[in-house]
Image (cartoon, rainbow, N blue to C red; front, side, top):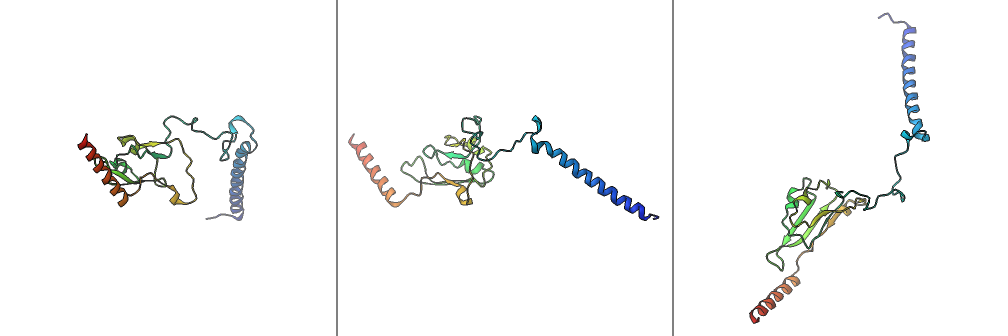
Length: 177
């Protein structure tokens, strides 16, 4: 190990020069972006929301996977969407409703903080009540605001009593007719 002081100093300044050269090349490569010097170095970042170039629903492709929406009137409560969801973003509860052939969907929640917009739930929805909208802006301040509820609400005792009287009236009308 016969290294002299001069060789150590030479190595040190060599490394300093290589580092300075690297920093200079990085700076020079960013200059065209700073001053928009050519067509290839134009600014691509947009301010949000930009009123001039912001997208509207008409600008988006036909198969855009935006936020989910459930048309609860068409929903049969089969829970296939809940079963197929890979992130368990859909929660669904059903009760017996006025029409015994079709359940009452009391709770249908979609947690967009978990949803990955894969579209599997939309594909398995037999009545096609679950759809992707073209709405893609879902920013909120509280995580709890990312849960959308589409359910009809729990069946109350008053509703059950009202349905029972309606069923009795329908039976009576059916007998009289």
